[in-house]
Length: 118
Image 1 (cartoon, rainbow, N blue to C red):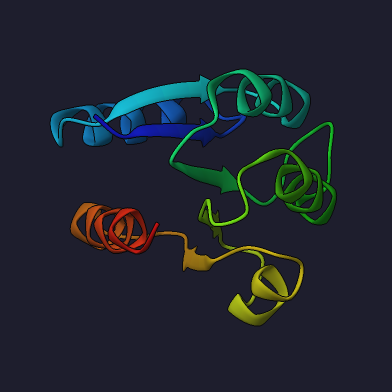
Image 2 (tube, helix red, strand yellow; image 1 turned 90 degrees about the vertical axis):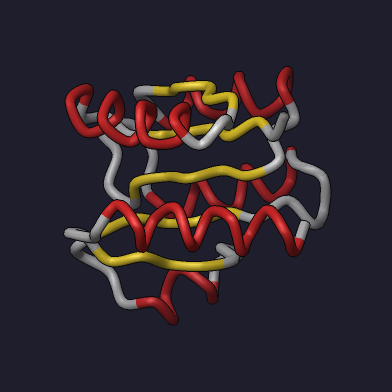
């Protein structure tokens, strides 16, 4: 079973995405902040990280760079945000970008593609 680290400071959104991933048979490790995500990433070594770009304690740039230094080299990082263009996320080390709002099928399709690549 693949492990997904889900980083989202909005609890309602985090729970909704977590349920969608759980329904797909994926193990979800939830983090409500960037620092919490780094702690989980170090201990759990997830197969995929899904993160919001705007967090209260770390910028998206800082989080992605620090995750890259912590995770296995090929671990995909998917950035979700309504405030960022795709090239910016990828330039700092993210594997993919999905703009908010998104359809559940879009997210699940992207997750499946990224897990297949890893």
